[in-house]
Image (cartoon, rainbow, N blue to C red; front, side):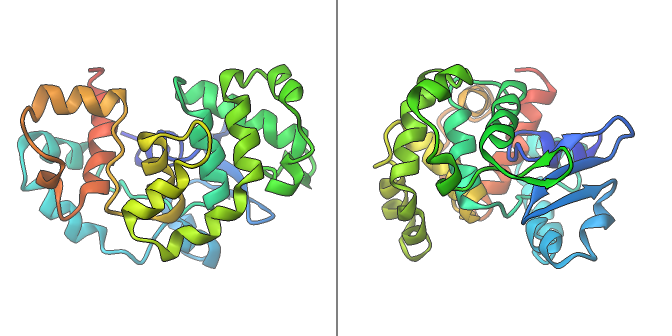
Length: 246
């Protein structure tokens, strides 16, 4: 199992593209980053933080694997899974795009927004648009890009993007409620933004895949069962759900 592929392109980020030679590239932090293996994240300060290198995931994995057979298998299948530390704005628009969508399609929309509204960082490589850059768009232009019903949600997120600055200082429930003040953001998308955009490790987003896992393997169990690592457990279960094709 390609651990790096699961981490970079398995649903928590849509910034990364797998190249024909097996490497991965993304435009982040006004730069094109190219990586081939996990060690490539160690030398660059931005990538080191982005890849959350300094968190003790090994200890967390041992504790997670001891919970039950499914999580034990998940840790064995994806031994280096982790939660990336992503930009809140990028995560907000990414997970608005994720609604009723699949990873391939979300990635296509992410790239279209970057090419149309972002700026060229290196020849042929475009940054994801800032709120200011994306404010040039309109409902019609978004429809032309085929974002579908999410067009209104994106427009409202642009208008309210300043609220993202308040999230770090809020308790989880308050932060979730604030994010849900953006049109179209419900509990699931808010929890994804909090987890992947703000690294709130108490988050446990429940989408269709996770709901299937919970119903099949954890009937009657509360989310508290997955403490003290609910976010990482969720990511392991999400990866397993796709792997075993629930």
